[in-house]
Picture 1 (cartoon, one colour):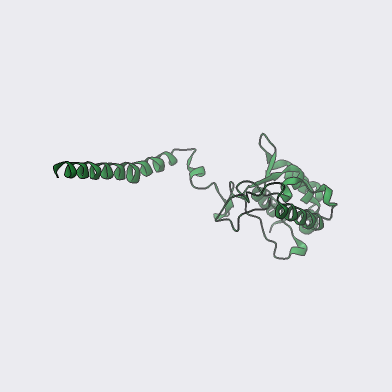
Picture 2 (cartoon, helix red, strand yellow):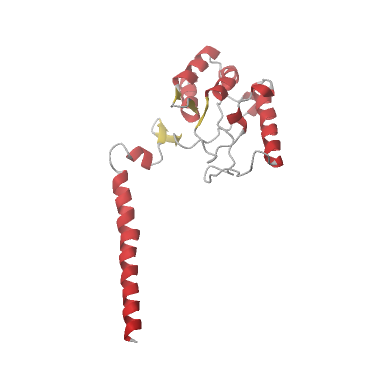
Length: 191
């Protein structure tokens, strides 16, 4: 009986110590590290603000929805396999999955129609979801494909819209952050 009591007491002590370490000390340590200058923006979600109001995240891509799809003035992100921005994840479908092949073909046709180009000109990242489904950036090719439509619906010269794409291209593998590009287009148009 004494042995059972000792084991129960030892187990309770381990439980209390681990609760304090992992339930209090560790979260406080992570929070303290996130307050280090230079890390705070990333720890807070890299929120992008305009006129003092949060307009999105530089790290989470959310596809903009035009009020009038026939006059769509926005650059668009990659498609998402997630139902909404609060969830993420790829579809986990293989490249040979019939449903995925059909989805990609439908996306290719829809984007070609929206952009007024031949479906063969639609780049792969325009029709395939990323692993997270929430990429903030698109390829330069996909951004350039959208330039004529954005210029037409915003009234900004195509050369100026293409210049904005170049200004917002960055990274080792060049990409264009869609939120920041759309904000730049808004600034130029005064919307």
